[in-house]
Image (cartoon, rainbow, N blue to C red; front, side):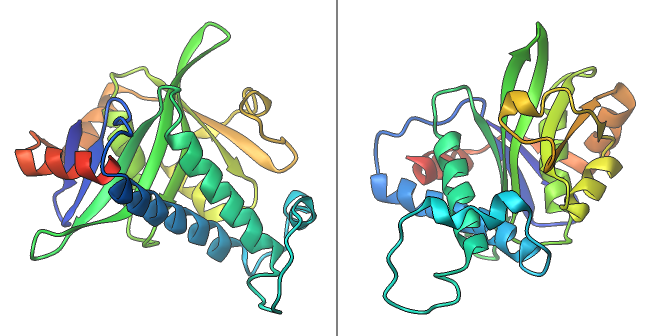
Amino acid sequence: MRLFSHHQTNITYEITNALPPIERSEPRLLAHILTLYAMYRNGIYETRINKPLDPDIAVFKPRFNFNYTNNSNTANNNLYHYASYIGLDAMQELFKEEGGQCCVAYKKSKTNKKTAVGFLVFYEKEIDAKKIVYISHVSVGEMHKGIGTKLIQSVIKNYPENTRFYLCARKRNEEGLACYEKLGFTYDPTYIEKFGYKPEYFVGMTHTSCLEELNKIKSNLEEHTPNQSDVSYFSTSFR
C-alpha cells in the first residue's frame, strides 16, 4: 500500500496495489462496504435531487418489481433507486478480480480513529494496444473540501510521468467536470462506449501526466511509510 497525507489537514489517502482478499472477518468487510456504498449513493442522490432527471434515470425504476407497503417519498423515488443501484454496482465492481485498485481518504480524530470520507476506484487497462489508467468511481462524503481533488492527485502521483488517465462523467455533473478540468483533464469521447456508457448522457475525459505536475503534487501530498497500525487497520477493514 502507499500512504499520502496533505500538509494542512488530518486526512490521509491510502492506495493498495491490489484489492485485499475477502477471506476473514466478514462483518468488518460488510460494515466497510456499506459505509462506502452509502457515501456513494448519497453523493449521487444529493447532487441530482434538485436537477432535471436524464431520461435514462427517469425510466430506471420500472425495471424493478418493488412492492412497497408505504407511501414513503424515498421508497418511491426513482432517483434514489438509481443511486442505490449504482452505489451497489460500484461496490461489487470494486471487489471483482479484475485488477481493481482503491484509494480511500481517511480522516483521523484526536483519538486516532479513522473514518472514510472519500474513495476512488481505478483500473489499469489496455485498450487498442494503449495502456491507460481508468478512473471508474470517485465519491466524497464531505463536499467542497478538496478531497476529490486529492484522491485523483494521489492516483496520478502513484504513476510515472506520461501516464494516460481516462474517466467518464455525467454531462450534468457540472461540479465534477469543473474539478476534472482544473486537474488538467480534457474532453475525449474515444472510450465512452467501451466502458459501457451512453455518449448522450456521459462525456469522456483524458489526461496525461507530466513531471512538472508530479512535482507540484509532491509539494502538497507527502508520502509516508505505513506503520504497522496503518497496515493492520486497512487489512482488517477490508477483510
